[in-house]
Amino acid sequence: MTEIGSSDLGATPAKLPTSVRRQPGVARLWFYLLLLPPVLWLGLLIILPHIQLFILSLKEKVAPRVYTYGLDNYIGFFNEPLYWMTLLRTATISILATALTLVIAFPVAYYIAKMLRGRTKNLIFVLALLPFWVSELVRTLGWIMLLRETGIISNTLLSLGLIPERVELLGNDAAIITGLVYTSMLFMVVPLINSLDSLDDSLIEAAYDLGGKGVAILREIIIPHAMPGIVAGSIVVFMLTLGNIVTPAFLGGKNSIWFTDQIYQKFIVRFNWEQGSAFGFLLLITSSLVVWLGLKLTRQSLAKTIT
Amino acid sequence: MIPSIPRSSAAKFTYAAYIFVFFVYLFAPLIAVSVFAFNDSQFPSLPWRGFTLDWFLSSAGRTGVGRTGLFFDNGLMSSIGTSTKVAIIVTLISVTVGTTNAFLLERMNFRGRGILYVVMLWPLVIPGVILGVSILQFMSTIANGLEDFFNIRIDFMRPGLPLVIAGQFSFIATIATLIISARLRKFDIELEEAALNLGASHWMAIWTVTLPFLRPSMIGAGIISILMSFENFNTTLMLVGSDAPITIRVFTAMRDGVSPVINALSLVMMFAMATLAIGLMFTGGSKDQGK
Image (cartoon, rainbow over all chains, first blue to last red; front, side, top):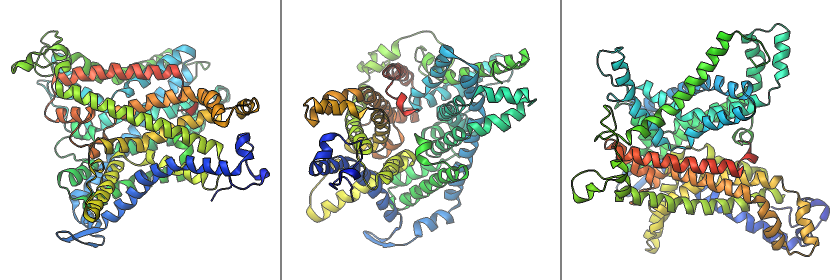
């Protein structure tokens, strides 16, 4: 398993502290001690629980305390339009929200990365990040205050005479998307700024000197260069949007169920863990598939994208 | 497109206006939350009925009638306490494991290191809800098994704070590992070797040379852990028992209909989080990560 123990000095990395290099037995002990926490952490909290989740999703109840194994929980999902429509809706709205976040965030990221310099740049950057250290619940509460019938936007429009009476702006898909885009903004802006920061101004100047127009420069130079940031941001935003609970629960209406809410209902309210596990797995697969596709299409690695 | 390229003043103005509108959009919800914490009304909505500090300081509700301010609301205050307890434990474990992981990943060369690194990133791409339910059903299955076969009751594997801590730790540990590893990667190993040559033991060298070097990243990882633990909702929701952390309490309160007390609480939380976040910028601990 390990190369640490081998007493061949040449094979051990030069990085190892001297004492470790001299005592292979001690090094091996150290190695196993250091390996223990991640093995316990990933084994007991990530890998085994997910294997068990998969097994549970295959379990079918035939009588009290009697189970068989099969695909019934998954078949049940595809046979009940309410279930698969919800997942489809959740995924569609998530893609829409991700695209919208990108479109709104890009000019802002570009402005911070390329138009600003020095202290102003740092200040604006920090200012753009600050709202996201606030709990998602608080941010959602803010949108309730703004969008509800007795809220600020409705009242402002009324007093300006733009609408005849108060309007309820909560409880529809537009409200959900507004909230989702807002909540995701940070995760788009930061990778975009990081990738745009490394774009050399002289490239844009050269394109301009050669007669390139704004749109051409954007398409030929800026967007290709920002691609890693666009992919990283979009992947993270999509994932977080798909797995969101709070925003759809409070900003959406009675008919706009999010798929996470179905999972919550199955597990916590109905106590149908077998079906819930199948739902959980379907969400995990949808999410992983999109992440994987995004990485494949743009030839990037997970490690690079996240860190 | 960049300052050195000439543009019409109309284009410049439009761009600047867009940025301004963006920032209005960023701060509008937070300002709305804050303002209604001071409205002298039963509901956090217009019309404005005058300024009051009741939603923070009123203790009238204790006598049965009247308002209960945030600082006299036993339920809310106790869940702040619960969250604090959870955050401290999660942070201590995460930073400790993050540090040992950094040594494992940066100092040890072993087969499977690449795989371990990738697996460590998984918790960040698994939706929080799924982390929650997978841990919930896994621990319950084990607890049921132990109860059935050995007749032992294991309460800490049932929904409750120990599981909440485990759930939050399962992904915060990744973040701590990334931050602390990035810093250790920059450490000049010769410093440690110098200490060894001067007669320090292995432990002494790490304690007096390496760990002080890692300290900024450990503090940075700690602050991020506290923030993430305090604000975590999705994973916590699935694992929570009878003691509700603050996010769960706020969620339930918001479901029952919003009260200005929640606005007051939000304002206090905003200040606490902003203070921590600004503290984080001063430690510079997260800079190494490039995030």
